[in-house]
Image (cartoon, rainbow, N blue to C red):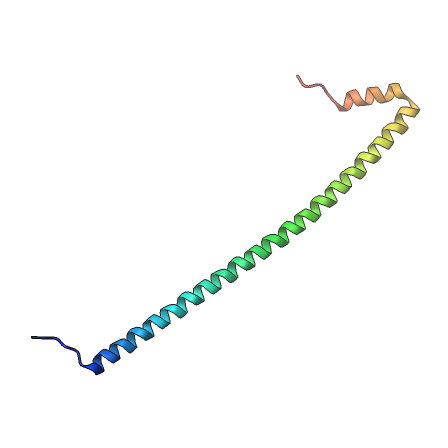
Length: 98
C-alpha cells in the first residue's frame, strides 16, 4: 500500500504549516517586543531611582558641609571664650577606647 498525497492535500498541508509557522513568528516577535519594553521600562525606573538617590546624596553632603562649617565656627567662638573649658568638653565628648 502506497500512501501518496494528492496535490490538493499537499497544498492544504503546506498552507496549514505556513499558517502555523507565521503564527509562531508573530508570537515570538510579540514576546520579544514585550520583553524589550519591560526591560526598557525597568531600566528607566532604575535610572529615575538613581537620579533621585543622587540628589538626596548631594543634599546630605551639602548639609554635612554646612554643619561642619557651623561646628568649626562654634569651636572658634568657644575657644575664644574659655580654651580650658573647651578642652574639658572635648574630653567628655570623645571617650578613649579601651
